[in-house]
Image 1: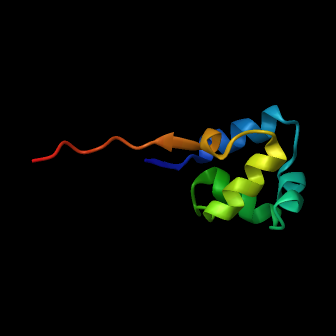
Image 2: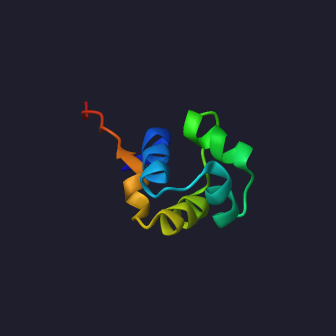
Length: 73
């Protein structure tokens, strides 16, 4: 299982040479929304993560972090 990673989104965006505005246009959202995602204020829907990954030239999993499983009792 994985969860969205604001840090990974920002790193991928910067590595791709895109501004927040450019990424926002690519995923049909506002730059403020992208800023919210990068700061962890809001979490994008899965379809938006897929669109962002496409715009950044990566796999959607690259924008997520694994979640540790709890030990069964």
